[in-house]
Length: 586
Image (cartoon, rainbow, N blue to C red; front, side, top):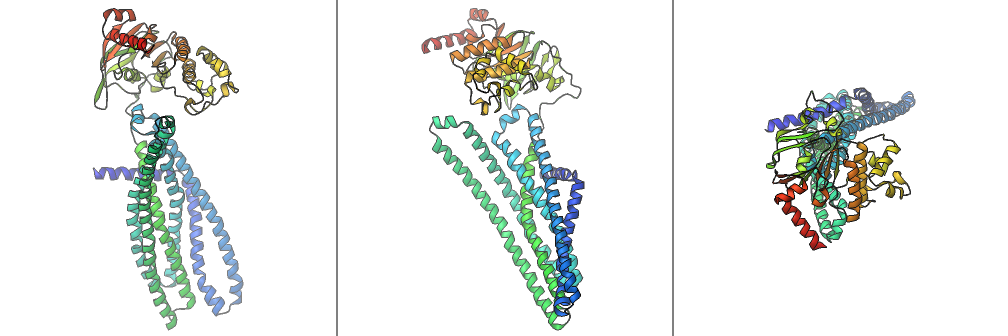
């Protein structure tokens, strides 16, 4: 199992490198700039010898004129190359992150409803924002610096071997020892970083829930409780962040000490060679400058490796989502369902959610244009049944047919184009009324939008706003009342003009006046459509052609309102319960 997980991780990193390689031309130019920067660093160390020996000891006037000009040229070219390297690598990094973020969101949108029900919204938001930003830091900054430092180390190594190969051998021997903390501490940073990212995701999820549910928090006087929960989460994150700080902080002094040992030996041995006449001061200081410059990028590699390890941990979390497979699979030779009135048939349908069987042996035949009401106690399986029609879930056994075609053999897009849904929760977007009504039919004319609004009895209150259809309604339609939001949702469904309609307790949360307007709008919406109505208030479904009573996932009664009342069975009892309840309330 461990070998398999290691292979998966390596494959993810290869995919990330593949994204980097797609920008190979810009990457090649950036590496050319890095080589120039590294060469300029090595050349600076190389020039220490002629500066000391030719200018200060031999008093060479020609070299005094030449070397400053050479230094100016070197640093001018270095500056241009440094800019080019930074721009190109950041361009590569930002483009990779855009593609990764786009890929992540693209894949999330294709995952089934069950995925979003199991995952926390805030955690998913954190994957798209926080985790991808950490990868950005790795790709555009750490990776760039690591490449540049590798080239610099290579260039300076050539200089020290050229100046004194014996002394250089010792300096190089110290390098592998210096790299030990880079590797060892990097592993620990990656483990801690994963914990930090998970803690940050939990905080994002918590913030999302408490901001959305702020009214409930205040209504129940839970402000102090939520503050304590938040402090606990930030305390946990603080502890993990400090653990990461300790690991990162330890790597630098250890490398400083190892570097100091090497430099101390070089000063002792090199100084002895200068005093004995075996070497010149210029050679020694040129070598010394190159070694000091060499140890600096080696020390930086520790910090860069920490950033790379954090980025790799974030990469794993992002690819956990990207590699998640949907259980709603489209058939390779899927057919397109034409836009027309439809008959919907359930044949021996069973459905289970996790380990619980929610629907058992459902057999229904709904004719085109028929209104079918689904009633029963909460948890009876009503919503699960209608959720199978647009393939939000797939049946565990049996099949669902539209005009005789198994919906699993149809394209998901054409299937969902046949269906409009109005739910109890009015899901609207923080945009204009025009945008929300036209959401299911992008590019609709203002005439069509207004027509839909009039049919949904929403036109009058929309025109009361100063900006009318261009009014921004706020997050989740916060500027509108419950009835107004529901009528906007009905207008959206009307404009889509789908032949199959699903109404999931569309009026259950409304007051009497709002329900009256929404009910009128729904009557316009249901005309000529094959309609599935889930109703809590049985008094609102008298218009249904047929009523089905669901209990514990099974159909226990079926018929018209009068027929079911005459049977005095389950439906009769539900109706009596509501009738008595309404009388008591009045």
